[in-house]
Image 1: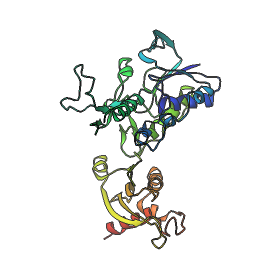
Image 2 (image 1 turned 60 degrees about the vertical axis):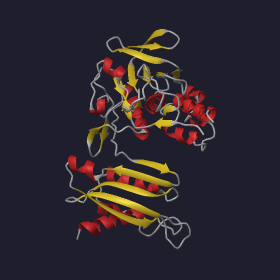
Image 3 (image 1 turned 30 degrees about the vertical axis):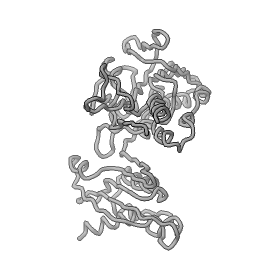
Image 4 (image 1 turned 90 degrees about the vertical axis):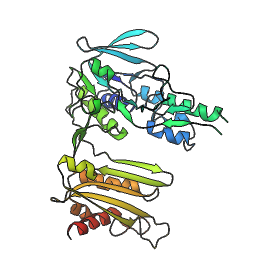
Length: 369
């Protein structure tokens, strides 16, 4: 069986790795538009800041590592057209070629949004003026670095205002589009086109609380790609759904969220109540403690935990604490149930009541008045 993956980022590579893991005899080809497969887009800001010493360190795996798994990489190769009936993919990269497949996985990802700002687009509608940069790919990264290195008090604008799904290839092949123009797929990553799957930032997201939405995240793309790779081999794997769990470092602070906020929960049929509180990340008498600010969202009638937001010092384990809430929401727990969890404690690292449990108790107290 010949499996072809379009896209060398999270979804495409995850699909290829899973297919080769399940069937070492599977013939797997990954079509990559540039020369940087399996590079971390999320890590680009840290290379630009100097925290990551070399751009090659952004590779999750080297080309040699990927090829050692048995997959075939077609680098600097662009997928142009899918002939669904003939099960062929037209590619270009040094010439045109028709690549046959038995199963196809589309992982074309997303592209940066270009806001309607005068002067942003060049004469052809695609370019940008000198010193103005999008930041989404390794090519963008090198362009930013050239501006920083070549210009002496340098003036630069980064346009980073979100992304939209890249669906041209799939849409022209007849795939149905859904929320925000993303490719409509079921929980098995099937597009509805025969033998064509899709995963990652180009597809809709099945959310455990909202249903079908669009929420492009690297973590989601990895999971969806793995599901697609397994099912392309005849498996029956289901994508379990997203909660939009995210964390970001802002200088020496960290902010995280999971689940829903009020304005998201109410249209979904919940009666949300959000309560803000604070707690120490560990016992205050042990040096180095930090305050964590929390917002806990629960359903007024059922007490179900719907969401949580955390903000605090980067050393306050914000990421792992939001994961406690994400796990609780994933399994449909109540706010009260979160308070009952048996969690670890030692004074340098926590408190007898974990910080997120104290947030849960503040919610319970506020809603029982």
